[in-house]
Length: 289
Image 1 (cartoon, helix red, strand yellow):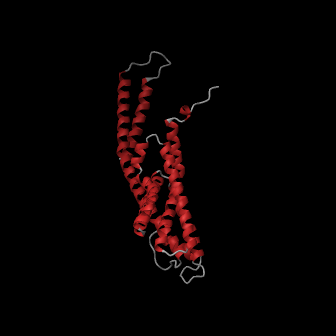
Image 2 (cartoon, one colour; image 1 turned 60 degrees about the vertical axis):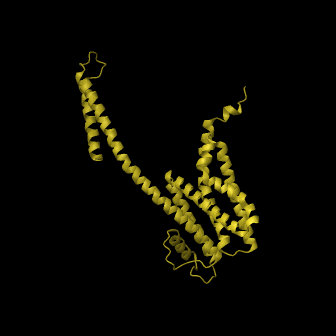
Image 3 (cartoon, helix red, strand yellow; image 1 turned 30 degrees about the horizontal axis):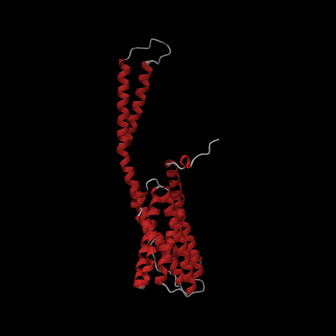
């Protein structure tokens, strides 16, 4: 028995299939990691953390970065058009390449560090938008709505823990849940708000989720209505083509002689069937119009 060669197994079709499956499976995890990474990059520059907390942030950043590097090079390996992939995925290249400029901070000080952090946050935010758009435009709305609901519940739980025994207006999980709903919908009544650094960090993450979700949801609804309106003329054209074919068949049957053998269909019966079909099609066309 001949052992299959690598060329027989690693075909372009199989690579394309693996690429599609890998992209589909990793889409939602990468979205979650992108949102977490934005908070990890930005929060140390807006809030004061002790050395231990900063170490946790740095470790989390390194692990998430490793996941994105793995995703980038795995897709680069699987794709059959590597140059086209590099040209059409600048955000992923930016995410992978930016940490390589870390050595510049030695040369130009903390200012470069701030610029790199801002660029990384923007890159991950753009990546999150891309991932959320791809999920929504593929009509995976139950998955997205489930993710949003879980995010609200988890963030409310975290804030209720962080704000416990504090002087802020959030006293229990009910207050935290109300705050989470008003925050993610960008309403922000102002009657409840976190006062601790940890709670504000959760609030920052929840704001990003709300902005990304509702922005892409609006675009998806607009695309849906555009697709729906564009389908109506196409259906009308198809109905006109069906009616035209029915007319041609009727003319051919009218010109055909009666059956000479008993096993042949009766043209009169066929004409009756075609007439009924034509009437049903015309009724459908009128209802569409």
